[in-house]
Image (cartoon, rainbow, N blue to C red; front, side):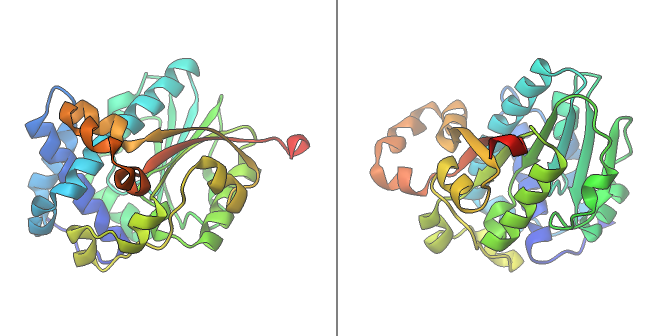
Length: 269
């Protein structure tokens, strides 16, 4: 067993890892992440909070399905592209979507990358970058081939608006024309929502926004909002009857989204 001791935001990666393992076992026809199952079995950590937090697990599974589809679609349209996974944690998406040509970079804080390197064997065409997402030096470690896709999953809700302006500015200036997939939490849920496993870790939600247009206007002025993908699209794939709740105005006010954004070249903006 591998002892893993993390607190705060980095600890949340263990909660989402458990969620992916749980849904791989309960819904294998929808989500296949055998690495998550294997990792959970090897990690010496009390997963009790994650096991009991069904809201977090359901949301994680839904967003995983949506992100997988969006990334897979981008790779299919741009063979040989470069994918940068910001705040990767113990994500194993590369193994689910790789086409045999993609160049992939996993970026996270040094203590997280240390855990990742201990638990996950190295793979050709995948490199890890140990740095803060707000460190302007990390793009220097990315060797771009083809089109660029930047994935920001499970991170923005733990950052400040100032941090996000820095992060999105780094992405815009370093990867002109890149596509970014950015998960955001609704402001109402950010202020009043609680997930038991997140509370236990000591992390707290600090940022929320309503949609891609607001995100671009306030923290990512160099980007163009292409479309918003609602979390309910993934929820319905897991539980078809969940579409009923999406008609309630309150649900729409707290629903998370994945924003599809494009970095505009300097001449455009």
